Length: 87
Image (tube, rainbow, N blue to C red; front, side, top):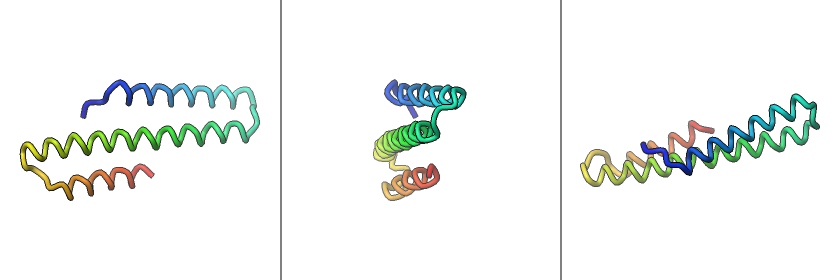
């Protein structure tokens, strides 16, 4: 799998969000603010997982078409299983 700059940048942004949350905790910020930021981070992680799984699925489908390895149904099931496991 080729992880492109967009994917890496998303993870870097999430890393920055987490550092910000730690700073908020160290500064004893209000619980609601911390939870809001944690929820935003979780959403960003979920979107990143979706992006990676969908990109991987496209890549696998292209390779399967070229080499006739796995059926499309198998590939889609694997992708769905990855998404389910991530929750």
